[in-house]
Image (cartoon, rainbow, N blue to C red; front, side, top):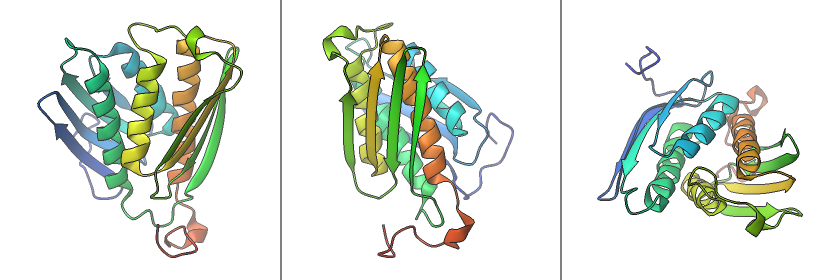
Length: 210
Protein backbone atom coordinates (compact mmCIF):
# COMPACT_ATOMS: atom_id res chain seq x y z
CA UNK A 1 0.00 0.00 0.00
CA UNK A 2 1.13 3.60 -0.58
CA UNK A 3 0.11 6.95 0.90
CA UNK A 4 -2.93 7.10 -1.38
CA UNK A 5 -4.29 3.81 -0.05
CA UNK A 6 -3.85 1.84 -3.27
CA UNK A 7 -1.85 -1.22 -4.21
CA UNK A 8 0.91 -0.84 -6.77
CA UNK A 9 0.36 -2.61 -10.08
CA UNK A 10 2.65 -3.08 -13.07
CA UNK A 11 0.63 -0.71 -15.28
CA UNK A 12 2.73 2.50 -15.52
CA UNK A 13 3.06 2.55 -11.75
CA UNK A 14 6.20 1.75 -9.79
CA UNK A 15 8.19 2.16 -6.60
CA UNK A 16 11.87 3.09 -6.90
CA UNK A 17 14.88 3.99 -4.80
CA UNK A 18 18.42 5.26 -5.38
CA UNK A 19 21.02 5.38 -2.64
CA UNK A 20 24.66 6.45 -2.62
CA UNK A 21 27.18 7.63 -0.06
CA UNK A 22 26.01 11.18 -0.72
CA UNK A 23 22.23 10.88 -1.12
CA UNK A 24 19.29 8.64 -0.29
CA UNK A 25 16.21 8.95 -2.49
CA UNK A 26 13.05 6.89 -2.19
CA UNK A 27 10.05 7.03 -4.51
CA UNK A 28 7.44 4.77 -2.87
CA UNK A 29 5.02 5.68 -5.64
CA UNK A 30 5.11 7.05 -9.15
CA UNK A 31 1.85 6.64 -11.05
CA UNK A 32 1.90 8.16 -14.52
CA UNK A 33 -1.88 7.75 -14.85
CA UNK A 34 -2.74 9.49 -11.60
CA UNK A 35 -4.65 12.54 -10.41
CA UNK A 36 -1.81 14.85 -9.43
CA UNK A 37 -1.62 13.78 -5.79
CA UNK A 38 1.78 14.21 -4.18
CA UNK A 39 3.82 14.06 -1.01
CA UNK A 40 7.29 15.40 -1.71
CA UNK A 41 9.95 15.98 0.94
CA UNK A 42 13.49 16.60 -0.37
CA UNK A 43 14.83 18.97 2.35
CA UNK A 44 15.14 21.56 -0.45
CA UNK A 45 11.99 23.60 0.04
CA UNK A 46 12.09 25.41 -3.30
CA UNK A 47 12.48 22.12 -5.20
CA UNK A 48 9.63 20.57 -3.18
CA UNK A 49 7.39 23.38 -4.43
CA UNK A 50 8.48 23.00 -8.06
CA UNK A 51 8.01 19.20 -8.04
CA UNK A 52 4.59 19.57 -6.45
CA UNK A 53 3.60 21.88 -9.33
CA UNK A 54 5.10 19.45 -11.86
CA UNK A 55 3.20 16.44 -10.53
CA UNK A 56 -0.06 18.36 -10.03
CA UNK A 57 -0.18 19.75 -13.57
CA UNK A 58 1.11 16.48 -15.06
CA UNK A 59 -1.49 14.47 -13.12
CA UNK A 60 1.23 12.16 -11.81
CA UNK A 61 0.67 10.63 -8.35
CA UNK A 62 4.04 10.93 -6.65
CA UNK A 63 5.53 10.21 -3.26
CA UNK A 64 9.19 11.17 -3.01
CA UNK A 65 11.49 11.38 0.02
CA UNK A 66 15.11 12.50 -0.24
CA UNK A 67 18.00 13.54 1.94
CA UNK A 68 21.71 14.03 1.42
CA UNK A 69 24.87 15.96 2.18
CA UNK A 70 23.30 19.40 1.99
CA UNK A 71 25.74 20.52 4.72
CA UNK A 72 28.28 20.52 1.87
CA UNK A 73 25.94 22.09 -0.71
CA UNK A 74 22.68 21.30 -2.52
CA UNK A 75 24.27 20.19 -5.77
CA UNK A 76 24.53 16.44 -5.09
CA UNK A 77 20.99 16.02 -3.77
CA UNK A 78 19.40 18.27 -6.41
CA UNK A 79 21.11 16.44 -9.29
CA UNK A 80 20.48 12.97 -7.83
CA UNK A 81 16.77 13.68 -7.44
CA UNK A 82 16.68 14.54 -11.15
CA UNK A 83 18.49 11.29 -11.93
CA UNK A 84 16.19 9.20 -9.73
CA UNK A 85 12.99 10.77 -11.04
CA UNK A 86 14.12 10.33 -14.65
CA UNK A 87 14.97 6.67 -14.05
CA UNK A 88 11.64 6.11 -12.31
CA UNK A 89 9.67 7.62 -15.19
CA UNK A 90 11.61 5.55 -17.71
CA UNK A 91 10.88 2.33 -15.83
CA UNK A 92 7.20 3.25 -15.37
CA UNK A 93 6.78 4.03 -19.08
CA UNK A 94 8.22 0.66 -20.11
CA UNK A 95 8.37 0.15 -23.88
CA UNK A 96 6.15 3.20 -24.52
CA UNK A 97 3.62 1.29 -26.60
CA UNK A 98 0.64 3.37 -27.64
CA UNK A 99 1.89 6.71 -26.32
CA UNK A 100 1.55 10.04 -28.12
CA UNK A 101 5.33 10.51 -27.73
CA UNK A 102 5.75 14.18 -28.78
CA UNK A 103 4.12 17.15 -27.07
CA UNK A 104 4.64 20.73 -25.94
CA UNK A 105 3.16 23.21 -23.51
CA UNK A 106 3.36 26.95 -22.93
CA UNK A 107 2.62 28.44 -19.52
CA UNK A 108 2.51 32.11 -18.44
CA UNK A 109 3.36 33.16 -14.89
CA UNK A 110 2.43 36.80 -14.53
CA UNK A 111 4.96 38.62 -16.76
CA UNK A 112 7.17 35.55 -17.27
CA UNK A 113 6.53 32.55 -19.48
CA UNK A 114 7.98 29.14 -20.33
CA UNK A 115 7.70 26.88 -23.35
CA UNK A 116 8.59 23.20 -23.03
CA UNK A 117 8.88 20.64 -25.85
CA UNK A 118 9.20 16.91 -25.14
CA UNK A 119 9.93 13.90 -27.34
CA UNK A 120 9.94 10.52 -25.58
CA UNK A 121 12.33 9.28 -28.24
CA UNK A 122 14.72 7.13 -26.19
CA UNK A 123 17.39 9.64 -27.28
CA UNK A 124 18.84 12.29 -24.99
CA UNK A 125 19.04 15.96 -25.96
CA UNK A 126 18.69 18.96 -23.66
CA UNK A 127 18.46 22.64 -24.52
CA UNK A 128 17.66 25.50 -22.16
CA UNK A 129 17.26 28.90 -23.78
CA UNK A 130 16.81 32.31 -22.21
CA UNK A 131 14.85 34.48 -24.64
CA UNK A 132 15.67 38.16 -24.07
CA UNK A 133 16.58 37.39 -20.45
CA UNK A 134 20.01 38.01 -18.94
CA UNK A 135 21.04 35.00 -16.85
CA UNK A 136 23.01 37.23 -14.49
CA UNK A 137 19.80 39.11 -13.67
CA UNK A 138 18.07 36.01 -12.25
CA UNK A 139 18.96 35.92 -8.57
CA UNK A 140 18.72 32.86 -6.32
CA UNK A 141 15.53 32.27 -4.34
CA UNK A 142 15.52 30.48 -0.98
CA UNK A 143 19.00 29.11 -1.72
CA UNK A 144 17.96 27.73 -5.13
CA UNK A 145 19.50 28.97 -8.38
CA UNK A 146 18.97 28.78 -12.12
CA UNK A 147 22.11 26.63 -12.30
CA UNK A 148 20.55 24.11 -9.90
CA UNK A 149 17.37 24.05 -12.00
CA UNK A 150 19.28 23.37 -15.22
CA UNK A 151 21.28 20.60 -13.52
CA UNK A 152 18.07 18.99 -12.27
CA UNK A 153 16.29 19.23 -15.62
CA UNK A 154 19.26 17.98 -17.63
CA UNK A 155 19.76 15.00 -15.28
CA UNK A 156 16.05 14.19 -15.53
CA UNK A 157 16.09 14.35 -19.34
CA UNK A 158 19.28 12.29 -19.61
CA UNK A 159 18.01 9.43 -17.43
CA UNK A 160 14.57 9.44 -19.05
CA UNK A 161 16.31 9.46 -22.47
CA UNK A 162 14.21 12.23 -23.97
CA UNK A 163 14.55 15.33 -26.06
CA UNK A 164 13.77 18.22 -23.71
CA UNK A 165 13.80 21.80 -25.01
CA UNK A 166 12.95 24.67 -22.68
CA UNK A 167 12.61 28.37 -23.40
CA UNK A 168 11.87 31.09 -20.87
CA UNK A 169 11.16 34.74 -21.48
CA UNK A 170 9.26 37.81 -20.44
CA UNK A 171 9.98 39.56 -17.15
CA UNK A 172 10.12 37.92 -13.76
CA UNK A 173 12.26 36.45 -11.01
CA UNK A 174 13.59 32.93 -10.51
CA UNK A 175 10.39 31.76 -8.83
CA UNK A 176 8.16 32.97 -11.65
CA UNK A 177 10.37 31.60 -14.42
CA UNK A 178 10.79 28.17 -12.85
CA UNK A 179 7.17 27.88 -11.78
CA UNK A 180 6.20 28.31 -15.43
CA UNK A 181 8.87 25.76 -16.48
CA UNK A 182 7.82 23.02 -14.07
CA UNK A 183 4.11 23.48 -14.80
CA UNK A 184 4.77 23.35 -18.55
CA UNK A 185 7.00 20.29 -18.15
CA UNK A 186 4.26 18.46 -16.27
CA UNK A 187 1.64 19.30 -18.90
CA UNK A 188 3.92 18.42 -21.84
CA UNK A 189 5.05 15.13 -20.29
CA UNK A 190 1.46 14.19 -19.48
CA UNK A 191 0.46 14.80 -23.10
CA UNK A 192 3.49 12.97 -24.52
CA UNK A 193 3.01 9.93 -22.26
CA UNK A 194 -0.73 9.78 -22.84
CA UNK A 195 -2.13 6.74 -24.62
CA UNK A 196 -3.52 7.34 -28.10
CA UNK A 197 -5.91 4.47 -28.96
CA UNK A 198 -5.26 5.04 -32.65
CA UNK A 199 -1.73 3.71 -32.10
CA UNK A 200 -3.27 0.30 -31.40
CA UNK A 201 -0.64 -0.37 -28.72
CA UNK A 202 2.21 0.03 -31.20
CA UNK A 203 5.57 1.65 -30.51
CA UNK A 204 5.27 5.29 -31.69
CA UNK A 205 7.99 5.22 -34.33
CA UNK A 206 7.98 4.52 -38.06
CA UNK A 207 11.05 2.34 -37.37
CA UNK A 208 9.02 0.08 -35.07
CA UNK A 209 11.40 0.71 -32.18
CA UNK A 210 12.45 3.70 -30.09
